[in-house]
Length: 337
Image 1 (spheres, helix red, strand yellow):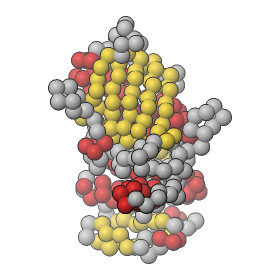
Image 2: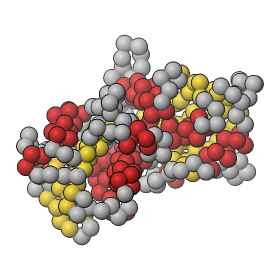
Image 3: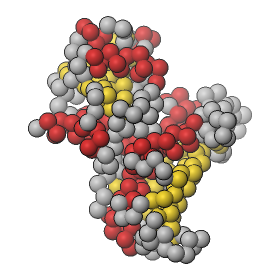
Image 4: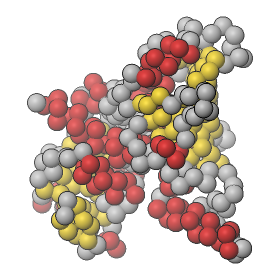
């Protein structure tokens, strides 16, 4: 396949290359694009040296691609993704630009493959937090419709980009050496601290990440009436988001039923060892392809058996972004065979 990555030097773009290599993606020709300041930067892929090129208005008119992955932000996607679609490529977009467009599938292959297959040239990869949440709750939603989700997130610093991760590393060194810590990339000190997700607060008091979780989870699960109450927080963890999830079902769901459903769910790994107090942790989810789910227990505030608590961890750069995008391409290729 002739494949292009827009935003190849960013965290998700780099992770896409790792996933391509690990999953033996059928890449015949690979072109890498980024901003003009990254032009000429060499990137290794399968023992080949590929130079990054600047993206221009006529890039997709000059060269044809089977698939184009966008991971350079919403503004770039809005400007260039329609051009790629018009030129005949399937666009898989990791930005927020098109996620809530009615005609654009919000793709998680384990959950809504039929919606993905009905694409009109453009498929959106959901917000990383919403993907991890949906992967954890979808197997339970199939047992009984989920009426309400209350979720509190503990989001890794690398979710804010490579510069934010470097800031965590710098602040860790400063703290160890007794040097004053300065916040430069993120709005607050990262080390030894937690704070509200670094997206703008809306008029309703919810930050942008929380609003995405509400809207995108409903769309992915195909339930516009689902009640969702999120609180999204940054924590000083390098990689992999964690989520504390409280569910209310229409019908009672037991812990054993939930454990059984999750143990057979694709893309999910059950980590629920009460005897050894071993449950999902970001250190074990990092760089892995599965969303880890555990800490399953009945909600004592819902004595009718319709409430469950659980905890999930997932790598926001892999299943939360790059892996999901590559799985979408794999699904489309399999559907054509």
